[in-house]
Picture: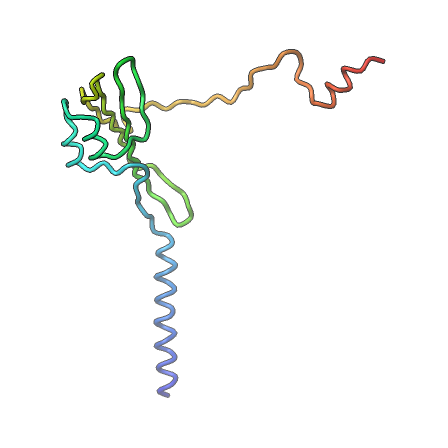
Amino acid sequence: MMVLRSANRFLSILFVVFVAVGLSGCLTQQRTQGYDIPEDSLEQVRPGVSKELVEFVLGSPQTTNTFGDEQAYYYVETKVEQTAFGLTTVKSRTVLAVYFDKNDRVTDKAVYGLEDGKVVDVVSRRTPGFGQDRSFLQQLLGSLSF
């Protein structure tokens, strides 16, 4: 009788563990892709500070751009939610743009979010080549004259 009770208790605990593990697979996980831009680091980036200080506080930028004598650093932070099945959903995106003058001093910074972006449709049309579109074999046979 005692063995039967402990076997039932063990099976009950095992069942609860399996249900908990199974349900945890349905839960979502939130994570950050790219940079994590803390608010206190953002406050340190203000007009007049050097490029070296920006790199020390935020790290090296994800991308840069040059406009004549001026340069811009871009830091992108994306918060995504991922299910156990690998489906991801973008919850928020923040782009920090830091602008430098020709003396490598910050002139301005801007913070952009998802609401500032625009959806761009990708067109997958092919540019036609010279003449007809033919396969290699058609081109080879077409070059032979009978």
